[in-house]
Image (cartoon, rainbow, N blue to C red; front, side, top):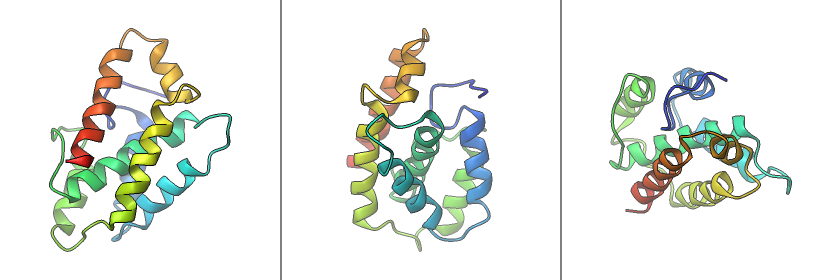
Length: 138
């Protein structure tokens, strides 16, 4: 996987997921992504699913008006959200699912967390995930 930033959008998996999102007009892709992450086994959440879930959670935060920094990497998601606001309001249960998924993303058995722990950027990545959680809960 190519990774160039610690935020949810700075990697190949995230960009591929955002391209797929552009093909749908509702929140089914977001919900399906969260459900897949929640159904991961006790061995931990695999990195690709965690990465996709972080982008899906960014969609929810942005739809609630709690978006993070808009960058070239987030452009596809930002355009999708802008085309749907204020019509597409996420259901409350999606926000609850998102918080549960964030717990799995940062859990000790998370593959993505382990990958970041092995890098010099773990603190920055961890702060990025914590900031996303804070925006979602605000």
